[in-house]
Image (cartoon, rainbow, N blue to C red; front, top):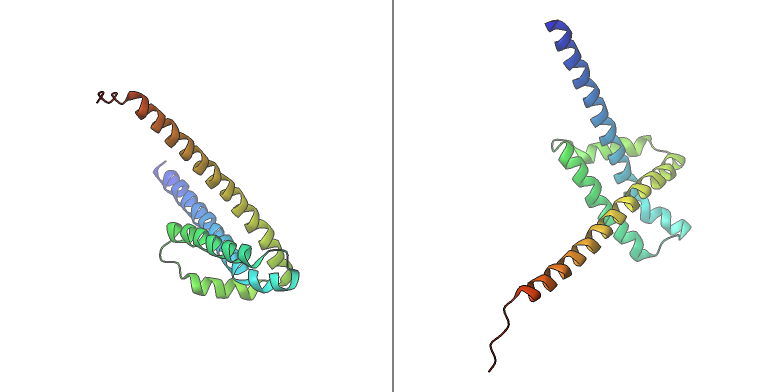
Length: 138
């Protein structure tokens, strides 16, 4: 019984490690795609220069944060070089779609959070004004 539990924990641990490695690889591939966005956009002109710069900055911060949070010891530079060498143009375009979709989803979530915080702040301010004692007459 004890051996079975140890084996089960080992299998779960290995499975978790493979999943984390796959997640890291996907995030590194997004960084590679982001690093090539300006170059590809020069040819397609689908985005404004400002949109490219904003996407590259926010996307890089997002994916670097994911990677750093998952494994601070990961050598991101080496991982990017390795993945860039494995990606052809078709794979790069596929990564633009996948990573762009993820960034859009996260961006919508951030927008909703921002709107909710503004609304809650306004409600709190109204409540504080309502609860504040009236100023004595002069």
